[in-house]
Image (tube, rainbow, N blue to C red; front, side):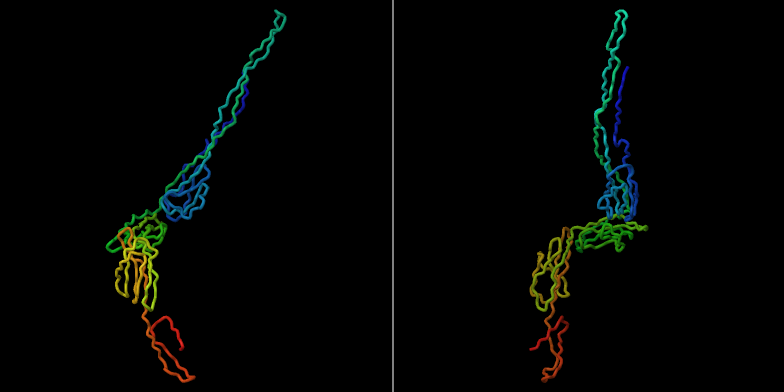
Length: 348
């Protein structure tokens, strides 16, 4: 006979029945600037949404933790959701069987001896199953899925950049598509300029986007112009009735000063041998403009904004009126001076 005492043990493996998120649902072809909702399927926790190779316009400061997110996507790219799912397994020892024998004294009457014959007879085993307390090993498994989207219409061809050294100009050129427009920012939607070529004088990004009949804007292409200086300006401008002497300075520029130029009256610009950012003028008696010529990493040389030293002629003042007045009498005096700013009268 075998007597068994069973201690029931339930084994728990948390996470074995979890259905992990496998997909993100949402539009894969979008019109730039429209709101689009993306949803992750399956079970998870601590969701965080991101845009990869693209931009969410007006993103949340903290990524939403729900299983869906609504975004305004303007550029081709992908949306990614990251989350963590806790998985636990029992790493305790397996249950153990502990058995021990059971004996019982049994006595039989023996008529031959007129007494009892007793013995300790084996009756079987008593077995118990024992299990140590569960030991759970839990960890968070990071997981992620993503969905690619494209913006319609397709982006325009890449604009070209030409540095014309002969004319000291930089020209950016696009294909002759009336539906592609130059923008000042990468998500711009201006229809003001669809010219095939543009002459630019400032380094930086010049963006190009296409607009279709459904008012959808494409991804942008960037013509990034480098190698030309930021020209800055020369100052201060001054006005004077007398020959003027002083110092003018170039500010707000990049690149190297190649030379200065001056323009006397309505004449042409002439060169001044000066590569400094300052220039001392002396005894300027005719209205004259001054500017600096700057060169960057390319061959293009561009002028700064000029300063003007305006010289006015010393006025000849003619007083018109009686040369003498009787005591107690009166009269009027007028001046012939031309157009000047102000007059001040004195009495001797």
